[in-house]
Image 1 (cartoon, one colour):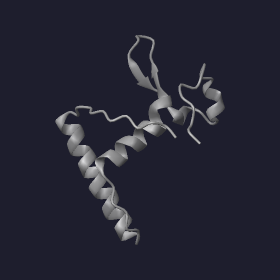
Image 2 (tube, rainbow, N blue to C red; image 1 turned 135 degrees about the vertical axis):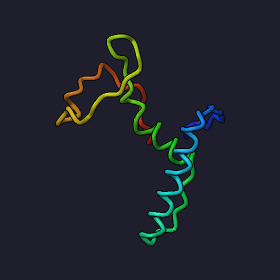
Image 3 (tube, helix red, strand yellow; image 1 turned 90 degrees about the vertical axis):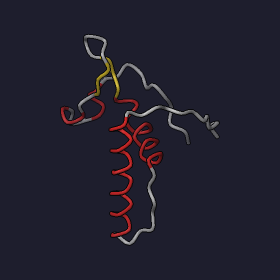
Image 4 (cartoon, one colour; image 1 turned 180 degrees about the vertical axis):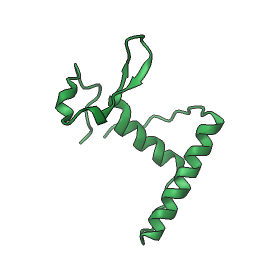
Length: 89
């Protein structure tokens, strides 16, 4: 079982507002679907990190960029040189 590391990141004001708003909207939608799920800002942040981290790359200028999955029909076409992390089982 991986060790949980407690760390804090500082969000920009607009990022915090957007996370809070999204958490509220997702919770409201879940309740309207009959699911009693409460989503927090940290739920969304963890989900985003786990699912998007391998899509972050450097562009030709050395700036952070994301792989545009809409341009690939098959994920194998990406040809990434390595997987940055292993999925925990």
